[in-house]
Image 1 (cartoon, rainbow, N blue to C red):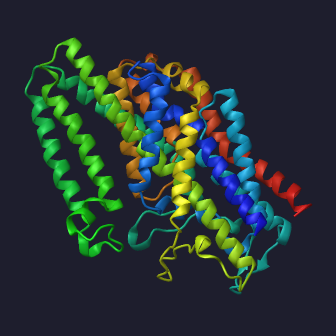
Image 2: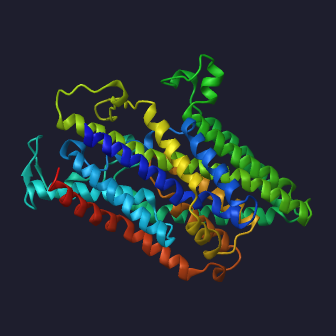
Image 3: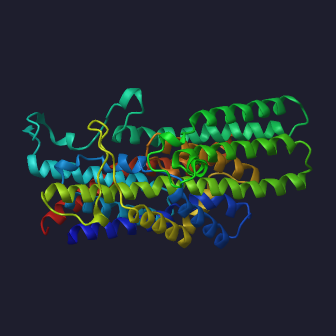
Length: 443
């Protein structure tokens, strides 16, 4: 039990570090454009990091918890993974490199699990509890097909989104920038497009809504408020609110003078920054929830017959067996609190990289980048994919830079960031493997 409590404490410390390491993702553009002071920006971002507690479910947490097969690992594996993730995060923060906290956690977890499998079974095949032949590398959930044609999961999908998440950010922010640029012209075409987009958004979001009868645990007795505040529905309401707000601005953009347009864009940056901070809190906090849930599951597996107190009564969901997941309320509350506290601490070295070194950012570009980043995070969270908020916002900033000209992006800085992204998972995995072998000598 002592080791389990240690892992939970370290996981929350990692969550705190994640907050100040990734604070730059949400506040860099509003600080660079002087919409908010650095202190105001971190308070703003931290508030919406915490507010995500009432918005998002636990889909990403489930994906992270199942990075390795919990029936085949022990608590030392998870401890080694968390320690390695903390070390890599602190190193990259010190160097001012906006690497992915998400991927260092997943890389550490997977690396320690593989080290454990090799230590126990070696490189030869072995017979598992199911009677089938297994190999050391199968301890990690590399790929699992989606149920009923849904989105597949596994570490390979997470690795794929090292490339796909920033590309989605680039694509979305480029399109939003072009949309805003055309909306500033005094022609009817962009307005027709904007109205059509508003109608399509309302229709699409309405189709995604979950009715009261389909809500497993309504938050209120009132049908109306339960539907409005259901975590699934809130995400789609936010998507609609973001798109419709930008659309309304586009409808009046051409009638504003330069001073009025700049003022409106700065107010919209508050909205886009808040939206991104929500996505950051919802996406990144769930990864720590997943680690804590996996630790409890492993403790139960390695101590059969143990009676768990209600505050640690965690059950991982299993769609194949029809098992519903259970997570005590204090776990998400603690995770969201820790990441919000970390964001309050700021991460000024990375703010400088994100806010000025990639490309020069104005209020116009800040709105486009943060809006694109927020929509990308909501989309990937809906698919239960733990993507990097760092990769997403970096791609979005590159996208707005490309609307000016290709040379507006400082590609030397960008290439250095990409190298950090590529190396994060393997280095974290290697660090975790070393930590595992070292810890196994004492635990």
